Length: 505
Image: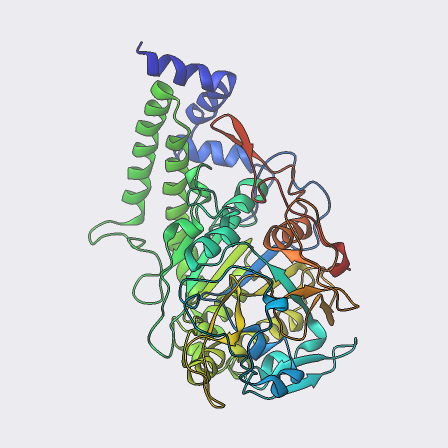
């Protein structure tokens, strides 16, 4: 026995023997399938597969999360954070007392001045059962669901550039390599439907063509968690998942027999080396086999009545649009997919904001609102948490040339806006506020709060706080869902995060 084999076998211990027994007890469906059936013996085909035995830590309010991610950083000042007093400040320099030495990106740090740019778009106040919610004319459909929204205006992050900021909000670290949010959920809670992945990612077409920032597979990857928890990225053209169809000349019986034989070979390999990724590989083969039937049915939206397309918009009939993906997200939630993420790129308006932002909003406004309305219509909103927003906000000053009709905005991590709906969050409220310049988070008296990671500052919500709060709604104590790797326990929120109970029912 080699040194590697010795440590591999020792690491598995009694667990390896137990798994060996399960895998060897297979019947017609092969070794690993028998193990899968043993794990889910109380649930028929298509029902839940268990996660960790200690989870959920308490009764969940939300069984599904749908995250609508506006990649690039939507301008909160042009969409939600209404600042009417800025109109009188047009083209004046941002006061140094407001900026207070806060860092800038290299894209605007060389500017001779930082001229204030009031939003050129009109705002309307919507009834939200609180004091009212101001929403830009660019998002009228979103305004129509004001009573369902919990709008957080005091989001903040330390990351000031796109890739670290997106990686941070998705994985809890600005450095690549950590598991994604959906992977943590899959690892901890398991599946609600054996025939579909626990975590699905959808990418949306961008009307204006230049999608700007790239999205990398590590954003929905597993990092150091077992590989079967990776997000499955669905395609909008051709097969939804590559190589899902059987090749020509292969029938279902042949495919089943082949998988049984591969399972036996992989089981032998696992017995020799004790590598848990071999188990993950077997699970993925079996999931792919079941998805050959479940995914085509999921993606076939022809059965949806016309009133549904009237709700989401006719674009919902075109695969790959944001509207079509929102409709698919609702269908996935109905079928028990736990974590669904829809990416929409192109929200990085360093210039020409006046022309680009309306196109971006038109892509997503009706469908985002329709998703919330549809879930409520079906009685699913209470147990489905929908989140909308990007990785950071935009500056109140103009990047580049400023005019009354056009301007650009740089990255702004110190304060930005996201909204949530359903899943046990309070509907019809606004949480947090910013100063008259939309630059700093302030308390109810207008005093700057200057939040930091060491302690939670009431009235603010760091991205770790939001992730901790989302996990809480799924029945997870974010401090207890950990994974030991390289000698330490890791978690999604690192060593930070606070459940913001002020936004919960």
